[in-house]
Image (cartoon, rainbow, N blue to C red; front, side):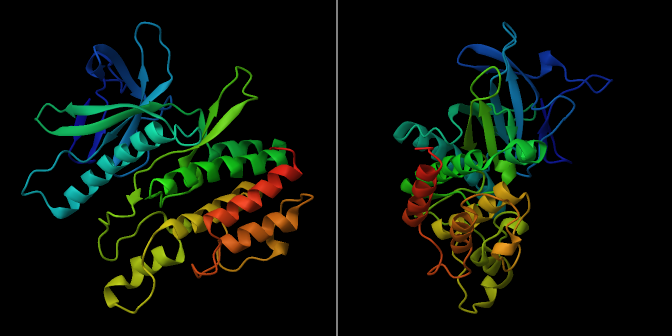
Length: 323
C-alpha cells in the first residue's frame, strides 16, 4: 500500500499492468497476515474523501468476509491545520461510536466493528484504520436491481431495521448525519440470499451530543439528503440570522424520512410532497405516507420524534405480521 499525496488517499501497490501486488498489500492483525484487495473486483478505490475501504483476504483459506477502512488523514502534529485535526478526529469518533454500539447494545442493524489499529506508510505517516464485517451490497444497488420483486412487507421490514440502527446510535447520544442509500448495507445470512439483515454503515460524519467539532458554514452530508437545519448551517450560519443551524437527532429523523421515501418510491423527495406523489401501491399507502410526511416537516417542533416513529412502525409491523 501507499499514500498518494496527489489523490490524498491510500492506494494499493500495483504491477506494470495495474494489478494489485499481494505481497506489497499486506497487513498484520493480531499475529495474522491478510491481503488487502479492492472492495469490488475492477474497482480500485471507493468513494469518500476522508477514507478508503478495501476487503481483507485470508491467504490461507481465501475467505473474504471482512472489510478494512483507512483514514486518508494521517495522525496530525501540533502544527497541523485545524481542518486536518478535525477530519482526523472524526475518524477516531467513528471508531469510538462503533465500539460503543458493539459493546453496549451489539445492535444487529449497525455494522459491527471487529478491530482497529494504525498503519504506517513508507514516509513515516501514521493512518488509523478499523476492520468490520463486509457487506454484500448497498441499498441503492439492491432496490434499483430488485424493485419489481420487493413487496411492501419487505420494504416495511427494511424501514424497521434502519430505524432500529439509528435509534441505537441515539441512545448513546450519537447522531449519524449522513443517512443515504449508499450508507445502508445488506448482509446475506443464507446461501440462497433469501435471508438477510440491513445495517447502518459509514459513520464518517457521526457526532456526539456533547462534542461539537463542526466548522462554521460547513456542509455536513450530501446536498440531496440534507435537513433544513443542515442547509441553514451551510448557507447562513456565519450571517447570524437566527435560523436553526444545529444538526442533531431531529436531523437524522429528516434524513431517515427521505430514506423511507426512497425505499418505497426509488427517488428522493425534494420540496413539498403529496399523497399523489407516492408511487408505490400498497394496502396501507396513506398510513405509510403519513409517517414519512411527518418526518419531513421543515420545523423540528412539528417533525416526528423517535418514539413516535417507533409507534408508527410497530403498527405497520403488526399489520403485515412482521412482529
